[in-house]
Image (cartoon, rainbow, N blue to C red; front, side, top):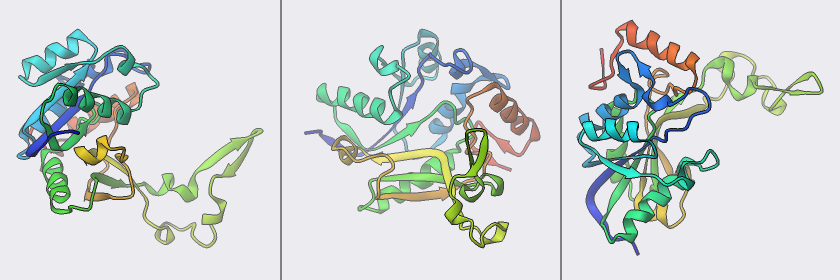
Length: 247
C-alpha cells in the first residue's frame, strides 16, 4: 500500500521525445523558448506544488529539465510508445516511486508540455478546490466549447454523405442561445494519488470543476498550425506566459 504524505503535492510533466506531427515537439520553439519551458515556469510560479518531475525518454528534454532544477524520471521505451495513454503512463510512474518505498503525494497534477498557456493561478485554484472537497477524486479546468464546434453542430461522413453525429439533440436547439453549454478540458487536471493508484480514472464520476478558463489557456499545441496560433497569442500582448498573469 502506498505511503501518502498529506502535505505533499507533485506535478508530473509528461514529455516524451517522439512526435508524429512536429519532430521533437516539446523542444520546438514558441517565441524564444522551447515549448516545454512554459509549463515548467507556470508550475514553478504556483504556490501549491512542492515537487516537479519531468518524465522523458530524450536526453535533450532531460537537459532542459535539469537546467530548471526539477527532478527527472527516465522513461522506459515501453512507456514512450504511441499506444500508451497519459493515464497509463502517470499511473506507472507513480507505481515506480511507490516501489522504491518513497512517500507519494496527496495530490498529483498532470502537466502536458503542449499546454503552454496554463496559468499558475489556475493550478493553485484547482488544487485548493480538490483539497477542500474530500469526496472528489480529481479536479479539472474546463473551457467553453465554441458555438460552431458544439456537439449539435458536429458532423460525420458516411459513403460520401454528411450526417449529424447527434441528430436527436438538434430538435429546436439549432440557435446559439438555445444550446446547452458544453466544455472541453482546460488543460489542467490533478488527482488524489491514492484513489488514482487504486484504479480511479482521471476523468471519473467524482471529478470536479476547478475553474473555467479562456480558450487561449486551453490551447493544445500539437501541429505547426497550433504553433502559429500560439505565436499570435504571444504577440497579442494579452498575457504573460511566464508568470501566468493575464493583463
